[in-house]
Image (cartoon, rainbow, N blue to C red; front, side):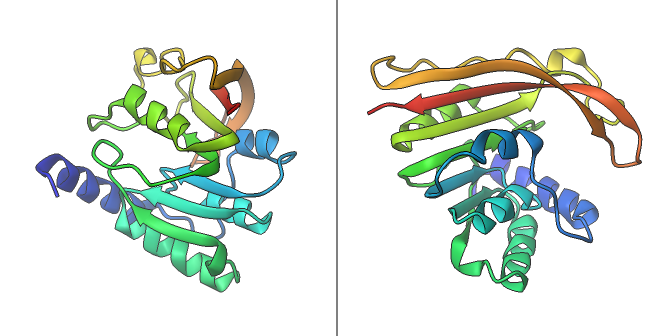
Length: 205
C-alpha cells in the first residue's frame, strides 16, 4: 500500500470501529427512490461503508460488489450478509479509489457521499464508474448539497455543485441532475432539512 492509502485505511478503520451501527444499517433514501423500479443485475456499491445499500440491493436480487477502503467495514458487512442469508449475493472488495477501481461490467454503479479528507480524484473515479457500466446500465451519484448541523465539515464550500465527468454523449446520457431537499435525522437524534445533489447517468450502448 502507498503511504496515503495506509493513512486513509487507518482513519476509516478507526471511524467504523467506533461508529458501526448495532442494528441493521439503513439504505440511502435516494438509492431506494431511484433503483426500486429497476430490474436487478450486477451492482457496484462504491464506498459501501456500514453496508446498508449493499444489503438493500441484495435483498432485491442484485449481485453486489461492495467496495470500501476499510477492512473493518467490509468484515462487518460480510458478517451481516451471512447472518441474513445474503452472502452469496454480496462480495466485499477492498479498494482505495484514489488508486484502484473494481473490474466491471456492472448494470448499476452507486456512489453515495464520497466525501473524504484524503485526496480523491473525483472526476477520474466517476469516469471509471461510467466506463464500468454495461450497455443500458446506470451510474447513480449522490453528494451532500448542504451542511447539516452534525456534519464533520461545517464549511459550505465542501458541498459544491455536482457535475458529470466529461463523457461521450453518444454513449452516456445524463438522465437526471437534481438538487433535492429532504428531512434528515442526525446521529444525536436532531432533525434538519438537507440538500442532496443527485446525478444519474445512463450508458446507452
